[in-house]
Image 1 (cartoon, rainbow, N blue to C red):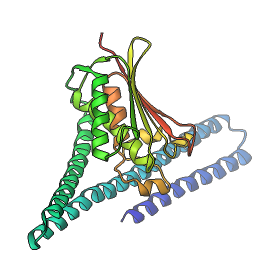
Image 2 (cartoon, one colour):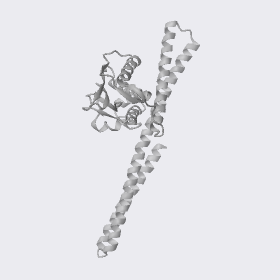
Image 3 (tube, one colour):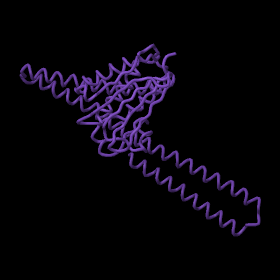
Image 4 (cartoon, rainbow, N blue to C red):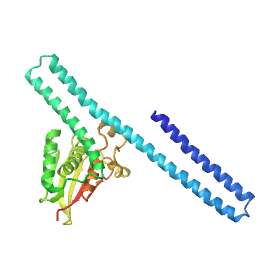
Length: 296
């Protein structure tokens, strides 16, 4: 069904281009055979410009819809995988525990796997729900005084436990306390997303540097730098779009729904700040930055 819809859209675009070419032929023919009629020539130019502008705008709209459809399809596939895989794993180990005699050591291992998959399901659902809440302009953040340095420290410790890595893999360089006014859950989700992404994309031998410091006496800044595959310059802005995932072999190796960085940017904006990425290019790692105004 999706392929048929795309073919129809391409056919419609081709029809629009054909109409433009046909109109141009009529127009130049009109110039050759009736070049003395100035008023009709002026009206013809206006009509031609209106037709070209209309078809061009319609073509741009259709191309955007095609891209949104592709991103939506990729999101549905990713969500299906993120939900189906842990559910299948939980069912498998639960049926094993029910149907067979398992020694205590193995049982504890199965329990740990089931709990890990449950956490994965919970994270996936929370990401989807959080995207809906953040995307709704009618729901303001639940603001409260926070120490951003302490929050980042807690997120780093959580990531070390969750991903089972050492302090060498995730190094934290704290600055002084950074008082801000923000939504605790939203800020924590944004910081955690950046650290989790850095670890996932860096793979084996990951080295992630996290810092929290003050910038120009007005803003708090969080930086998460990794030694991963880097980001091409053309992708640095696109990666923050909803459902967007980079193409290539890395995208197939690292699973996700294309929501993490969208949440990061949305949270920063909702708190009067901004978020962006820097990279020297493929193979040279990347750095993600969030800036949020300090509490007055």
